[in-house]
Image (cartoon, rainbow, N blue to C red; front, side, top):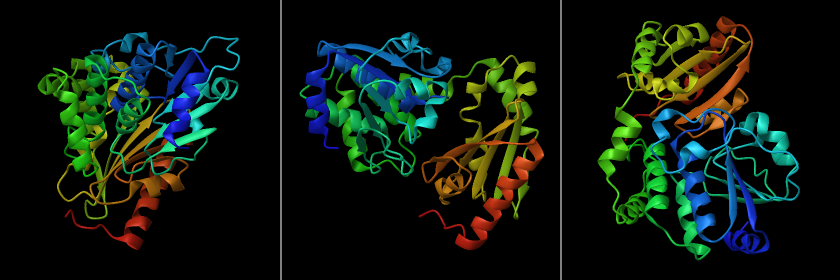
Length: 326
């Protein structure tokens, strides 16, 4: 779908819904808020939805606290923008509601996107969905303001690891520079996204690091977190968001894994790497994501799930190797 078709769609409706994925990250939240703000400035009625809780670290973004976790009944033909989702299953319990709505516009940058929308704007060369939203705002004749720019900048910063991941491109930096022209303070954004933690997160991290284990001459490393560990520390599942990076960042580790055993028979698996295509691994396990950051959810006994994932990664590394960082 060309973006011009999206701009035409906007002229046909006055009300829109925006959805993003369960366990939302900075790109999911920032992109949704920015697009919602742009539509409102254009005179549209907008509601933003996300299945589950918005992590506290993102509540500094304007109107983040207004994102709703339930979709009202009787929506008729309201068009739905689905942002930063590789497939509709990422909408969790909101999936059926979205399918009952009007036209679906799928806006995403994941290589595993299934093009599930009636219209699809999927650009895998973009560092973040926010880059696509930035372009769409301009192409539809909308204007940036400080609120939109802050949300987009936070989204891009989040998905690029504060501009240090390999998905950071010259275009990414040009967009970020343009956004900073709207009187943003990048140090504040960086601190909120990457440096501030509640005590519960640090205590939970302490317990998670105590589970650290290795395989394949320390090329594979993982930690395991249980629902009980989260409860004991007074934490919430969304506080696990950055934990897998501690494992990935150990010198010599090719693939870092975080297992979160939810206590309801499911394990949420986070995969990170600096060199290995973990999206391909996640795909084999029924998940998806980026080549360097992916995940999946697997049902079954905790130890069985861990062995299944680790064995698959061993085979993948054996067949594909672990390229050096260039």
